[in-house]
Amino acid sequence: MHNKLTRGDIRKMEEEIEHRKLVVRKEALEAVKEARAQGDLSENFEYYAAKRDKNKNESRIRYLERMIKTAQIVEDTSAEDEIGLYNTVEIYFEEDDEVETYRVVTTVRGNTLNGSISIESPIGKAILGKKVGDRVYVKISETAGYYVQIRSIQKTTDDGTDKLRGY
Image (cartoon, rainbow, N blue to C red; front, side, top):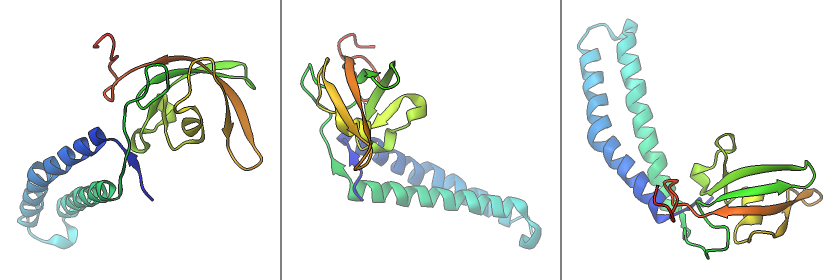
């Protein structure tokens, strides 16, 4: 499976990997060494906790490296009047007669509880590249779906700041 990531996502992952390798790894190894020095390992909770933290860090490094290796690079630019990555959109759900606001993000940043939808989600796929006023069919499965209408688009950058206003 290839995750769709921007160059910015990859840069941030590389920065996290570097931090984990140079800082966190060193701290974790020191914690294991200190806990081991306390004596009997069979009843040494600190030793097992330190080992667990060290292994979690190594696991996270491997996960990030695998994500970068298998990533599919996507551009985070779009036409001024089209929905693109990191844009905040207001969507009208016809069935529910409700308006909701979402931010369109890459796969790794998707979190509907925080108002972010992935470009890989059914609604993200459906609205990407659409314009204000467009009525879009969101296909959930072969037999199910629903219609939404694009109410507004706010252009933002990958860090959430407004491109036009600079904040």
